[in-house]
Image (cartoon, rainbow, N blue to C red; front, side, top):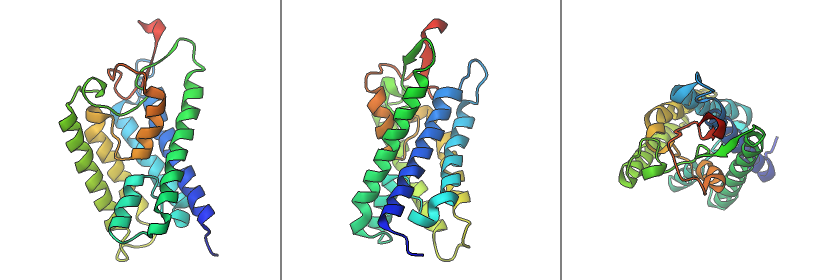
Length: 218
């Protein structure tokens, strides 16, 4: 069966949608619900599981990038064709924005909803731990580099078929365990863009990975 470009872009759209909906959704709705939630560890696992499940579900179609940084990194390494880079990035960003839109629609269905961070990334006052721009930049660069290194390694011809999604999902989980308190963890420009469109007016990152609060709780 020949896989068309439309199928590949559709796979990237749905994969990125699931990553944002599952990972950021866990952060927004479940991280501290209402007093006993899944916490940072649960959110980190949620992000890892989204990549793991969609890599198995649609990875055979598109290679399971779900992230412009991965697409560009694989292209720079000569392992992805130039002609498909823009299409992949557009599909990823659109998938992330649509997922953020769905999360917003769900979140606003709760009485007393008040936007607060919305699981967006940030530095300074918008960093969960109030880390500086330099600290956040170093964290994101290092984590993105090693995430790409893991992906390129496990996609080698020397690695058995069907094995790659496991270490990739675990690597993303580890990255979130490290960096949620620093930036709310991005390592993915599409994921950041989708949430930022709705959190642009937020003035505080104090909610950490919970991303929203009820005015009645104050």
